[in-house]
Image (cartoon, rainbow over all chains, first blue to last red; front, side):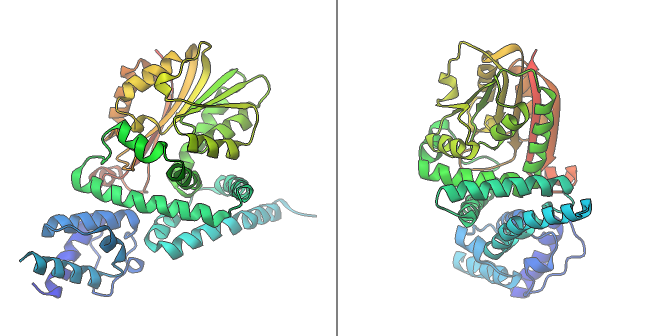
Length: 83
Length: 315
């Protein structure tokens, strides 16, 4: 799986959790760019992502991600570690 | 001559200097959370600015008396938000609150003065930083005004930071009214004592289930306590035993609101109403508000916390 694959799957998760069909993520997207992405929806996104990939984020990981690209790479690292 | 408009502007500026400072600090330290609370405070109404000005000025004096400043409160608030975030993640993962027993909560929180003091400062600020907490306070003020002149003995259970007690005393006055405040936590009583700053209140450290009062109360306030016990029906029954036959009670409790010391999970308002009825109470007036400005359907899907408040009396 590439970063672009994860990005495209992320886009679907964001649309579902934030209820906004117009969301178009790129690797540099931050909470400033997506109106509905705040602290509560961040947690909902984190848990939706965890369920999708069957992984768990640590507390510090949840707080450290500054943009979508960092989250995508975080996922890829976790999936690689599982294999 | 100063016009009405000028007064309003001056008031707004004076208020906003503290409110803006707090919001700016929160945004710097936790941008996603800063964004959320700023969004939720939009369109809150003019009264909020007047009321929050009074509150933040009072709060600034209160912390100054402790040799601290408002930034100390903001740090406590952000610490509370950080802990709540982990609890929320756990809640979304499991669908349950992580704390399973009163003993667990008592050991980790209530009997730990340092934890409790910080928690109380965080909660106190949330009363004016969270739209839904503020709206519930407004509803409380409306209910207290409706019983003005009918109260001689007033009790608050789980007085926490003391804000509700302080508001009630301002409305009902202090002449010929006995005010009692019961809390399980010494740390919480210390904060309330200093924030309320009125010698008319008798503060008592009790587990409410052990509290025995021969003389009954006209009015009991119990904000956000039901979710802290294993058996909320038993707690309301205890409260009923402390009430005069025509006495009134004001309660609040949240749904889907994970916190380190929340034990009993109410998933929706009907579950809370069922508990109220089971304990032998009827609802005089109630009010519910979600913590986010979302549709009911989305609130249910995303388990957005809701605050339920009610004025109740014995059947």
